[in-house]
Image 1 (tube, rainbow over the protein chains, first blue to last red):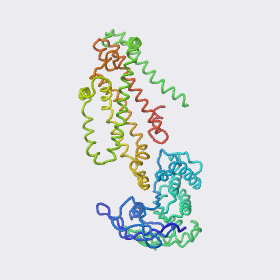
Image 2 (image 1 turned 90 degrees about the horizontal axis):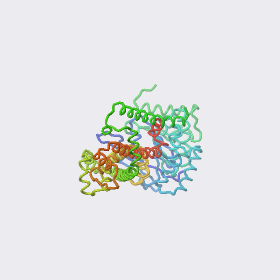
Image 3 (image 1 turned 90 degrees about the vertical axis):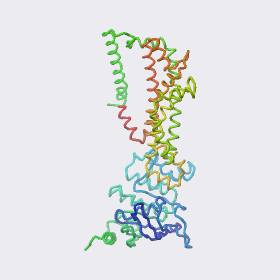
Image 4 (image 1 turned 120 degrees about the vertical axis):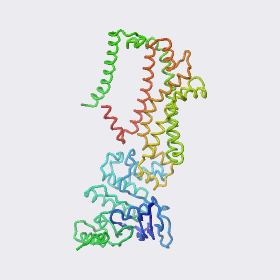
Length: 256
Length: 267
């Protein structure tokens, strides 16, 4: 799984106009092919971090780059990077298959090839039969699945997920989490998941970065094996509890 | 109620309304004995239209040509200029206020200038039509392009898409409903522009357009013919409006809420 490069974030700071500091000297490393979650209260800078990684926002100082084994670095934008946002962000006038094929279309892949690839990705996502539907004809959860399928179509090296489950109900969220795990494992991409759900982070991530007011508060390594995570077990609840404690500490809430 | 019954209703209701109004008109003229010079009977107008059918058909064709050509030029210029203005902030700041001010200049006042530039005849009618129809297309194009979902733009930014690619694959399709709204307004204005152009450029002879037929009929005190020509002017505008509305509906019917509203109106 580690044919994909690791990512290093070092000394990243971001000050918005008006002097609001969204990130202060944030450093961490995303292991090659791993899934790292960032969790923290609203306004802690986690989405800004992801947007800088995607090249949609500019850092005031510091960098977030690919890290090769020989220690050299390369800008993230130069490699294959995809983002799945909070909203599905599908073009409403395009069918599912044409939405999924869009990144390939923009990369100049010819029509037959990109449709074949998109079709394969859609089928693997369990969305067979929706190819010719329009986004408005799908449920919210289905639209997110299409958006996830679209991130897979270019075979990305880095996958950035910005609270992909925040707009769906708890039941759909559990199904989507399974799909996120599948997408991550199929692509083998070095993945960063921004979320505000502790159970989602524990369910999916190798390690969890807990943020507090524009800074990294601490990092929690999830001790459960990737293939063996069940929300209904006591071990899972214990893991959630540990992360909750760290979060409460970050938020300044007193715990027993 | 099923779809077919709804469609029949949609056609029958306005037709009945028109027939009732015409009957009332006819009855009022007969009852009051008003002079046919002031208000001719609808039956007389219909008779005149039939007798002058060759002249009126030719005139309608000419006016429709001017309005259609003017509308086509206004659409192309409006969408292209609107796209440039929306894309380039410097143009937006410099040209857009200017366009707004120019729009305030009354067409009737400008029309003689068009005669100086384009001469007496069809080109002036086309130019007048285009001048008056371009602004709503320009404004609605700019409005549509500036309202494109920024989230969708980020999808294109992530793929390093060029502005041209983004315009073709995102901005333009997303703006279709707004542009169609502008085109519908432009359709009516294009006919007005063509008639005004015909008034001032006064080309006529045996191939007079509707604007000239109206003027000549007025001078000859043939009120019935004036009414007939005016009705045909309206029908040219109605036809253009109908074509634009149908095209817009076909383009957006599958995904845009406005097309669903249209369905409601059609019921």
